[in-house]
Image (tube, rainbow, N blue to C red; front, side):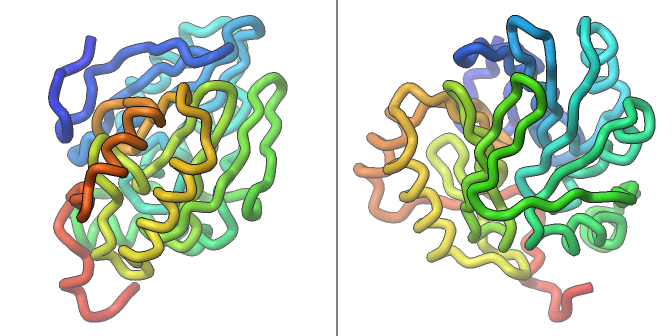
Length: 244
């Protein structure tokens, strides 16, 4: 079941059917980041999206599935989305994929976590990079990496059969925050507009924090909203004068 809240906190752990896939949600960490386990209904092949923390909770679902984990894919490189990456890579022998423009950011996860949230975050050791609009193929799990910069330079929306993972670019009736080094509010708005103009109305949106919704619902909100509010995740990093 869902919480019924329209913003934070995120949904309770749940499973939703999206096209030929099951989307298992695990809410992790102090910022209630949504980790998603995307499972192909027929083959059981699955991919993890944005494993932010709570490794044991993620593993409990993975270990209950009938087939092997194929890969880990990140929507962007902020520390609250990568905390469980290295543990999962080590245990299941899989690779982690991220847009080339966010590789450096993900490699700084430990520094950002301690500096801004007093969190110890294991920095991913090996990251495989991809480019704009690249198609990622992991067996029957096919993902199109749509570039949606603005929250970070390398933010992507991962689009597939009936679903899209929007990371911290688009939330329920909110856009991503732009008060971080490398962020740009104008660019986020352009990215959200691109998604809403490009994707089918029935596509289910799975954001990085908060509850899911659909493109048709998001389009109506977007057209009726003059100044879309930003979804606040943590203390703005813009208060810091220098980047690590």
